[in-house]
Length: 184
Image (cartoon, rainbow, N blue to C red):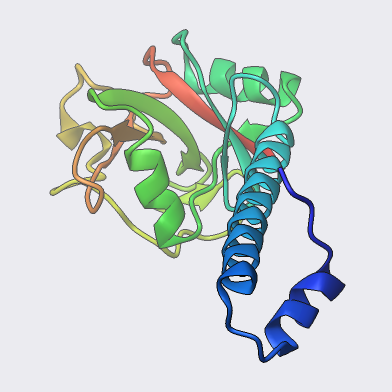
């Protein structure tokens, strides 16, 4: 490819000659600059992707890991911490949308939300209060009083489902997948 410096590009723009030679050079220059910008954007994108470990997804400055195994909420949190992360805290609408679309089929995954300290007072694992709510209809219900469900003190998200209402409370001992989050 033909390399063109910025000075040459500016000089081409200042020249008043409109003959075929200059138009051809200008066209080639524009093409080369477009290709260079595309290459730079691709390289920048790859660098951002590489900020997260293999198997993690990047979104808005964070890295997300969707487990392939299942376990209790406590097991999920231990696994995330072992990866230098923690269970995901959903604090903006765009993050909720991203996480809801992580899988095409419905997948239940633990998130970092619990009311284990005070029943009915949902807190994130960093002790912050719940400000955004994406509960399914009639949730959280703590098992609806049915003993077969027991205490439902941990929350999960149903990826691949309605992005507006896809949180549910479950027994913290249920075997679900999980989503870890850490800074990119």
